[in-house]
Length: 292
Length: 305
Image (cartoon, rainbow over all chains, first blue to last red; front, side, top):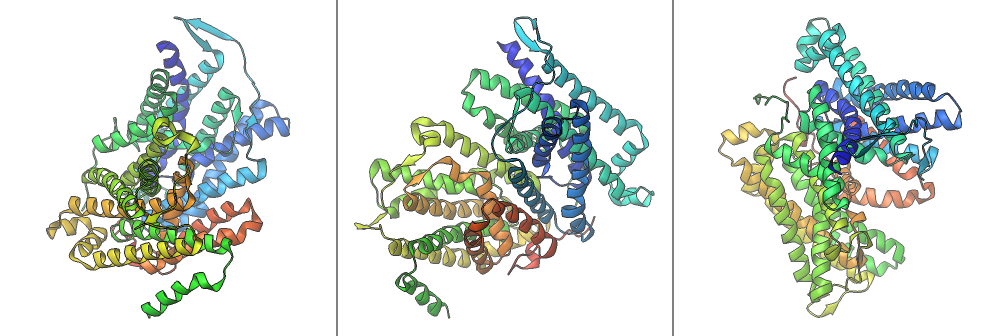
């Protein structure tokens, strides 16, 4: 029972981790919580489904198209709702509210174009399940978990080893200094949004496959939980997103198994509030010194 | 001028508006109280609260339960709703010792979701998603309020009380301290202002009036369930403050009226309403971030970086 809950928790947790990356990277570079990220996740899941079922594309082609289009949507959101504010050096509150507006807009756009009812997500990969220590582990679970981990690890390597990654880290540390060193800040921000959003699309599609249904509201809770995960691990720190995502997934699965299942969603928020009060910088984050 | 305005308002129920229009005006009244209370926190103290609906809901549930089980007068249930909400505001204000800006906003969001989920799951007290039904009409000194005109006057009195108290508060020493915190926290602290005390105060007072608004809503609607106090509701209240103008009481009252009545006028557009709503928020931020009547100073402009 416990082991089964652990497996379920790790599967969902890995998708939280993927979504958390988007929050974490944008926060690292712009110091802003991107509220539209949850809706971007929903768009990603819907795009995959539409390409696959309505347009009858091959599943992997649909998935790839969704990843690219959702990534571009991320760039578009930044260009329309955040870039003009950044250029004017507007206060952070305005950007926050602007992303909330985008989030409401996107969610309703999805409802108008594809309807608000729950849609069936076809079972694409089904190779049965294996039995390990009394727990049932489906191949889908293994696939989701390993895919998320591979993506996260390669993203980490990219950030640590490549030139683009170095430029991203420099921008996160001090964007002005990075600009003076000849780094194209706007390109870096675009790359950040593209990667964050396309990973959200991967997570959305995975969760759609896992539950075999999607509706226009999935991004709301998933987004908030992923945000809680990003904060738990340390917002702005990439390995933190993995740690936070997996922890939230596991805590939630175990709590739902042993406590009242109705409080399942409350767990992530309780963790979020407690973590922010006890250690706002997160498990892996460094306490930032206050600049006067 | 003010007397003229108030006497005009007292005439409204006699002008023969349809029950539908009266209902929209009463709802606007509830949101004016909510927006005024949030304005103290967001507009004057500079704390972006994403969980104001939680206080609204706590006030509504407190007074609904008191009215259903003990059949108390509205004066008492409203104050009780306000006080319980203020207590939670106090609790939520305490983390401000360590948190700032976005992080604090996220705590308020988490708080809002937790309150909603407790409301959904604590079946024995709140009856979960079925909500509380049969909340009695508000009674004041034996007078039972059950007509639209009476509700209108009651909400008008509540708005005037909220307005006068908050306005006096803002012009008092405490209010100046709050504005100082908004302008520059470090400088305010250096001037000897106890930041924690004033932030907690702002949270508690703001929550108190939101609780009173909730109490009125519970009696007026006679039915409440957790669906009325979601994160979207918090955003709606915040949007009123932002649209009207942070730090301007007249502005946020106007914002509340606009955001309650415009969606009603757009009823014909049905599903496009929320789409337009989202777009308006973005456009507003891009073109006039200080709101209709707002003071640009109410937005913190960073000095460096």
